[in-house]
Image (tube, rainbow, N blue to C red; front, side, top):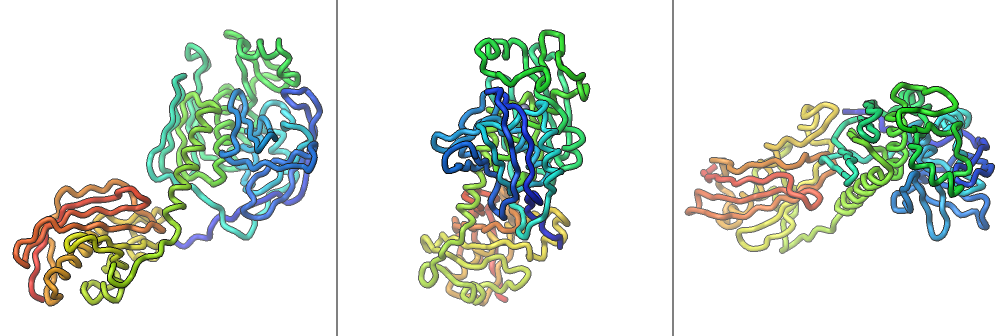
Length: 440
Ligand SMILES: [Zn+2]
């Protein structure tokens, strides 16, 4: 399991290029600058007084029509998705994107010019590890227009995308692992495509002054219009993946999961990014250390070890945090990567074995029984475990709250307990345990 953590990266030096802004048609210069660890990607409006910056974070998302707009207060930056996709996919975690207008130069409608710029600036490692979002449970978003995005657990960041136009015209599929090399070769050159019916009203209203066949592919009926021929036969779905990467970069953490997207758009991409951010907040909130009551309210590890005969590596309770009644209590087990079972369960993919959770429930339940009987001269043996359910994986770093309630005890020899384990406010496992007590 020993592997060096992936480090955060920034650009090696400042670099810039100029081009046309899509909406205003004016000239804009974009410059990338290095930034310290944990800075993230920030956009800087050099053309405004005090040169305000805007965090490329999902909470700053303002608009998702046609392109992704972020903002803080009254300051806006439009069409951020292609430059964000390039930075994120090329491995840049921290950078300042400085611009003298409210949107980046559109280039040729792909991420190629940003990749070229990042290459020019270089990408260098920093001293802090990257922050990840590991997908634990399947997440999904859908829209009334037929968009569906599913996020599955995966050790890598992968995207599998299906794109289809009106009447399923130009149906295309592409699947990839997002790495700098694959992105640069397969995704970055894919250009924006638009439907003639959608852009005609905008052109009429003069809202896309910088738009031309040099920076977009226009689909009109069966016809595909562009200055340069298609770069890939499936260029459309590749561009959709580009947009997914750019929009999900707003999460601000490296996703470890598989995005399966059907006809994705900025609105649903953003909705998924928001759901991920919410889940991350929930996890971080629960992961902060709690002050645990000691003394009469519970039992510390010394007291637990006076009661339970179990020892390393089989003592599965760190502390009892509370006794609600004589027959009900909550124990805590902090699961670390040092648990011996993670070595083999599984190499490279540590998941706490379900039977160890059942063992933890049994130990907490027997503490109740020992306390009731006021003796520890006996030892508890499992007779049965019923209604056992494992609902969610338990991973290194999780704190398990083990709830146990004695539902029946016949004499001092037989007991039944209803137990469940909770991680991050969600039940991860449950069981009904029956055990008997024999003299040691
Ligand atoms: Zn796009």
